Length: 608
Image (cartoon, rainbow, N blue to C red; front, side):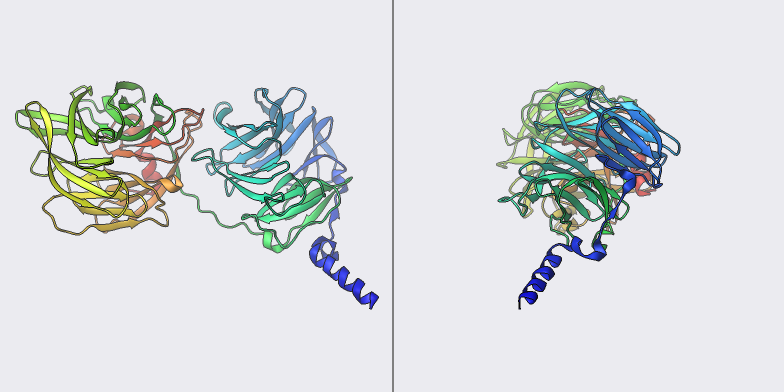
């Protein structure tokens, strides 16, 4: 009976500690000796760190090169022309970028010395194949640096937990993992755009399932590994923070690395290779949308936070290069920029939200160009006149019946004149004809209708007599723009799949051979392109990434946008897309607007 009890206990322990099974026995790697940090290179060589140097070893452990420095925080990325490595020179308090090719190890670039107590450092290679570096301080200060372009540039500052023990990035999932001493493992978005959010992947009790403290990290093909620094155990997690069936129950694990299908663990005085279980061998497929970059950007708005909102384009009749981007700062008023992004004018008109422009409007006694914006404090439409040189003048207000006016768009019907659609956060939409009387402007209500939930973005196709409305949580609607039509609205594209709520700005591009509807898919910071005519075929989606050479950051969380097929010259000879950028980086700052060449979009989506 006693022997049976011992057998059952032994069987239970083997089930709980898979590494105890003979089939899972680790392989000792004497070639690595007791180096504190190691990185496997694709050709079988090794990059290792000890107290005196960074060393390049061949497959047998024979040294091929070294750099004499007291290095820490080794990380690597495989590039098409070699290997990029980063280490921290602890004496000079300076990050160093190293390059490893077939024959040698060398310092490629030296970043400026940091002015904080560095705790951890890790590399990231984004969807554009641009390299980044995260620097994390003991007190939670952190910076993300873009390593591409002429010289490294700080992309953004960010706040991370104090006492970070380790950081690693999963490039495929664009996820930054950090282990916070005494609390757990956090996951952040690594790409630097969008709303900064974090998720607790694995917590220390009572916040999670581990009793010790999280330490060193390693990214696995299908998850992440973390050392419990008090117990010496290594926990293997999937991307949702669930424990994998394989776990490593070691005595004194200190450091981690990955080499092919092996997890390398410094356990005591030796590096061991643990074969990863089959469940960890395949990466899930992550869909990456095509990426274009902005060719220009405006100066930042004069108010911080959520301020910039919606752009429109005014075209100079004689010389399109002198055209203007007219945009709203919803904390200040109406802005005008030239095509180089320089602010040309500011009208302090209060809380303007959306704006639209129409030109060459026939009025009794002459023609005029107008911009119309929603004025939220006054629940009114603010009217602005634009002269032949693009100078803007405040021309008054048109009262509406809306309580919380929000979005707007203009429509020039075939019979002439000007009409405007304005919507309310409660779903109501009012349709007015704008009339010019005694040098001012009035509105005549033509109809009122509604969608079920909050709209904002809308755009009217003057040529086709069609109105598109974005219902933020539901999708894009198309309907006749004429107040006389009784035709029911059609849901052009529902939220789901490529269109992710909120549906924000809408714009039309009327090219020589085709017309397209562009929508801001704010929920995944992308832009959806559809045919502007029935059946509104889906043509693709794209994101706006970093223009490293020009020092222009990527774009996320876009509210309003506008497009034009006019030849503006240079990069914009086939037209222009202007988008609001919800988060200004390179460096951090107030919001602004980005200029994207239509030629780049057409190439990315294979549009005619």
